[in-house]
Image (cartoon, rainbow over all chains, first blue to last red; front, side, top):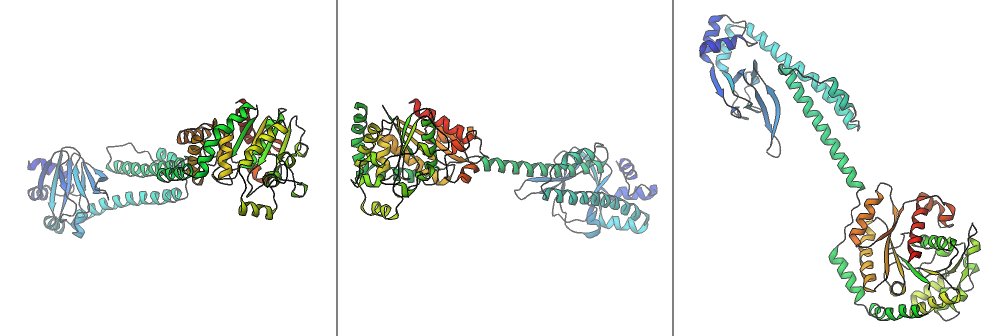
Length: 247
Length: 252
């Protein structure tokens, strides 16, 4: 088992440069998890005092929506770290992590991580590089989202088709591409939702609705047909019409 | 046998007078003799459409109802006032535009029974093929009488929440009066509504035939009761709808 763990750590961007004896030591400190599909790796609001390394399988990062439903924020796959921000800020978990398939993951506690960091400060550079890459990715799409939001606000929805084609990312083996796809998918799904709701409202506006208060109607009919005038006209009308026919 | 047609709406502002006047012209264009009675004594107005001024009126419907003249003496041949020569004849029996006379009607009332005998007299004296009655909105006595004695009752409504309940009440009351032919006309339809959808919805709501659907027309507003629409705008969709309605009314 530990050989497998050492091999896995050797493939990670954070630890690949560590000497074998450090990796061996590290392998004794990590906790290994094998989860089935839909099992929970991290629960939202739990204490954040460790990082997870996914070395086999895929997980989804999920948050709850206002209605108690599930919103998938991201997918992460082999070679990726999850929960690494807790190592720095020690804040409770901001989202849950659930297995999308059978997964193998390794957990490294904060205290062990800090010790390794003290002894092997070059690791810090890899971690910074890793986080920077995510930040660059994030800021690219934040900028796009801002631009597109302005266009949506001005009622311009036509750009979506062009942008979907331009930014169509299909390399599902790259975690960043998968993330980008998820973002684009969510964004354009929102756009479609807005557009179809708007269209539905438009059709509602032009659909004729005829509402009649039946109780009020019956009351008004009664007051007319029970009136003396109505009774008189009703009684005479047959005769009146009959006279005309004779003429 | 002459054809008595009441044009009615539960509320004012539905285009009742315009519809009446235009129907009269279309029917008369085919060579028929048509009478138009303005029984909207409280708020008369159809005379303006036929270019008849108050000063030209020696007698009105009011005088007849007060026993001051025969009804034929209150009938005016307005055929020559039209911008176009037509084959038939149009006789208008206007209500008085005189404020004092309107007030007197409101104050003293009149014998509604006289209206019916007046209609009979008109039909025989003027040898009318059709008599159109422009009624007062609502369901007052003269309206009920007009509905009761008519061969055809045209009930106009707009696609407007204000019109729905009253129209429903009127349809039911007309049914109780055993009206031979009751039909609805939807007027002033904004162009955002698909016509077939309006027809279907109105017919299913009132369980009554919709005989014409008339789109909202800016031209009607611009004309502003200063003439007969079908003569001014012979190719307009509103003209088509009115012709269709006239055909439906005279076929009976």
